[in-house]
Image (cartoon, rainbow over all chains, first blue to last red; front, side):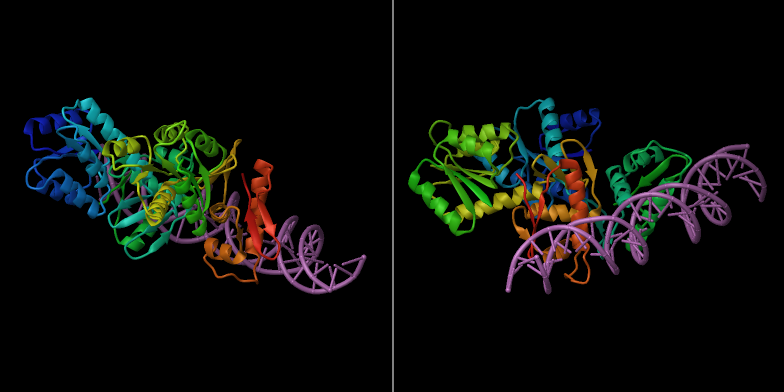
Length: 222
Length: 222
DNA sequence: AGAAAAAATGAAAAATTTTTCATAATTGTT
DNA sequence: AACAATTATGAAAAATTTTTCATTTTTTCT
């Protein structure tokens, strides 16, 4: 989980970052709106904590632009005072929640977790690189074409994407995709990985699924 | 599409109802909060238009109770004045939108359509009777068990549910489920209907799919 | 470099799903 | 009631997906 903290008060920003790291999140700090927009367009975050009053480009403006760019990353606005008309404005511009200062880290954490949970539960696609795995049609859309996946291929790819960048073992795949305890007498996992790789490579010319010899597989993208 | 109008000003209520009917919606009117809650628990609506100030139980309280009952039907609150703190409260209590009086019917219609569209796009299951068609796993959950559907069966049932209560022709089914223009040389539609009926009846003991001789099928439930 | 373990692969076998087909049952009309 | 049109059904055929299996290739370790 990667959180972007946009806050010009260095003390607050650093304290938030420290706390997030302590919780096992990774966190990046920006001190003004301009930097924030750059950071947001350069990498993906699971949530953005955005102060209202920041230099160069205001928080509200950052929020607005992010949404205009069709980026739906959850945003929590930090407002100095409990200014109700601000809240309305924030919600209208696409923020997902707001917190009034002063706040406790517990509160921030709870809200962050809530918006992330809410956001993930609304997702109907998983994107990677320039491709989209459509969870409703269960097809894969590459920039060029729509690829039909079999059920096992779909489940496998979905699990890989949900664990992108991490090693997944055959035991895990066996349980998640096949709902079976892993058995060394079969090699269905390998065969299905082979078939999925073939479809992915034929259509994207990229090798997303690396093997971690003796450990499992890693899905690497973007 | 069925809209519930909860409004104690008889003139406004009746005018809304007339307008909805003219647009091809069906509409029911309640004049106080108590009746509204009864109506809501007795039947399903596609959206609820709810006045803030109504007798017996206030609109805001109705809204709160509906949400507490885990009913997520889209609610639009009607407020007499553009009272910002009301708006906040409305949103926090789970309303989906609000309209300030006076309003034009065009505005009401546009907002209604917007909340319905938004709501439907967040749905991940379609419920009927005591059963749930899970759009993500593509399985059917009856009160007793989880039934695996084949792809065609799933698409067929989904289309039936999306057109519940209306006749659907074989031409429509052919195009939606099979992505093929209807051809009278095959009877796949009939065969698949038969198989779906079998699964449905074996697990629910009910006959949901009626045939409309010479016209098509109708899915009837609850 | 060579051996052992692990993973990849092509192709066959098995299982499941989809479609076709021949026939039976049902419905509406006369 | 008889007929024609429409729909339902069982079972086979075809197509697709899943799994197994024997063999080859790759990786790691010595």
